[in-house]
Length: 265
Image (cartoon, rainbow, N blue to C red):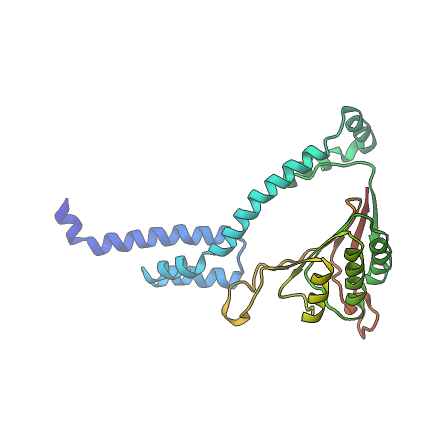
């Protein structure tokens, strides 16, 4: 047996290589990866014995992404549990909702099972079809805030519109409200002067995944593309419209069309 292994060691290693290469190729095909990248890695795995496997496991595995999403999954479960406890519907409420929904009850069940998103009642949802609609009512809601304002955005610029929003946050923070602002460190362009003004007023400013050296970091990926506002735990905004002049269509040569939702309840 040992003599056979010694005589055929190269063939055995080559066979193991191709077995692992086929497994790796299958894994790549099952992932939602760029088609060009998929084909490239499969060719490297099959054409270059041993070297292909080393290249794939060194550069083809998204270790950073896996680590980030594993951590996010744990945090999400804690948040979901707390939300479920806070939003527990009574039997009477559930019966009332089921009667109103009728045929849509299966859709509600599907959303709950797939996204852990329970149905809630006594809410109002308004569709805002562009920046003009969104920012007019958002400014009113921000000025009317009494307890807290929490925002999370991909793009915030301190242009005319951005300064209008940021100045409201500064004044509200001075009035004693809890103001938190999460901005993506790559997408947002807030000057050092405005960052200082925000922090001095008490606004809690958090840059998402800071990038010091853009050309020498892997943090350029996995950015925070959310556009969320929560006011007093009663009013919420979510959608696709960032905070800058171009999204308000105030001075655009081309019209920017996007949608946002205003939820109250």
